[in-house]
Image 1 (tube, one colour):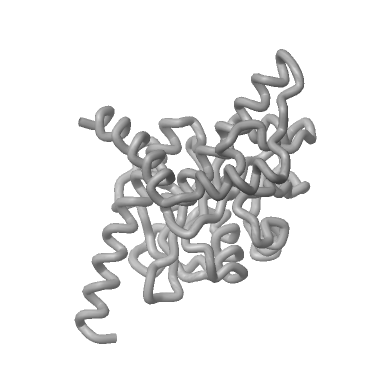
Image 2: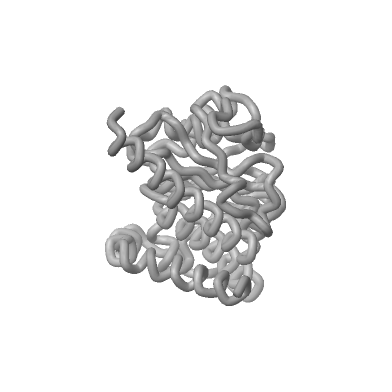
Length: 238
């Protein structure tokens, strides 16, 4: 690798680490991620990924808490180890060349629905961006490669999978995409739950999903969601 290429990788890693740290803190503030959960991104130009360290405090995370690992979970830039469920990320990256970022969240409403066997349904327009939401039927910590591969298989070519009584996993083309998908999944689940308390919510049909999904899956609209949450983070932290 040339000196220029090495500098490019270093710059990319620095920027991605900060972006991941911001994304995790924003999800924690939005109650989509709690004291657990993790967010990763492929490190361009390498076979490695960036992810928050297992012991990191999600509500006070900084870029220093983002570490580099290989797909087998080996730390490459220090002694901090990844979350034990890094297998979720590694398995999806092995299977999906199109995925550049993965988030495993512990959201309240979508997890609540999974506990009683109810799927998250497309009851708001933002759900069209999520597409078909998959369900992983086992209740387990995804702490082995075999389980990671099972989750990746259930996710398939899709963008989101709910883990029964556990949480959710979203896969995007970048950190912003994965962040927005995590937000949209939980917003959809919450609206569905609330609507079901007073009636039967209307579910988007296939044509609505297609048209609305195409309209809303645009970079500037995804960036708008990120900017909204990022501004709140800046205001809170001064």
